[in-house]
Length: 276
Image (cartoon, rainbow, N blue to C red; front, side, top):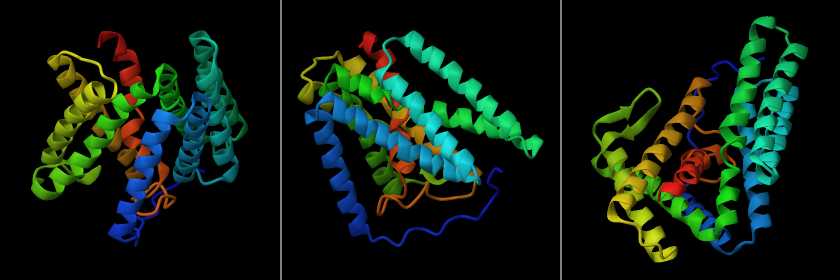
């Protein structure tokens, strides 16, 4: 059975101080890990994050524990293939296999029949949304920690600048139905933060002297995709009428709430890196 509307969850009662402390701790751990950790521990940490994200996603969209468990196993299996696959051909075959297995699950669990195709679609969405995208952070780490920071820093500053500018100057709603607190002013502020973060990461950390137009274009692209990733995750939550994906991270909600801006930025940067 798929979840129906269950009413918006009440806001977490964590204090602002808890949120600030958690933010600092997460930032230090992630930034230090991206720079100092060897490749294998980073790959494992990415898979753990994907597993937690799949768990939250499955709890949001499925009611039965069997389908939730199947979503996590299917998603983690494909994420592991994405992480350690010897070739892109194996990844393509793995995705085809994941879709095929999802349909087999839908055929085996077809009661009620009118929900079978929706269940299959949600299973495939979970794989594509998390397991097809997030392992690319491990690919970037394989190039070196500076490549991770070159996209991680602007993506995070998109969220930070967007929040600060939107909180202080925001008036025009960006997507009131999907995310009532998002404003156009916050969106533009996020783009500024992304451009500044991309310049800092490329010039100060990676010591790469990109032309000015590449800095602006790269920062804008990362900022736009990070913002859209936030809205995509909000769409998933709103479709099942919840505010946070979980309360796993004090003051922040769930893992999906922290990964939203990072989900599609790694694939973007990976495929655009040849043009920088």
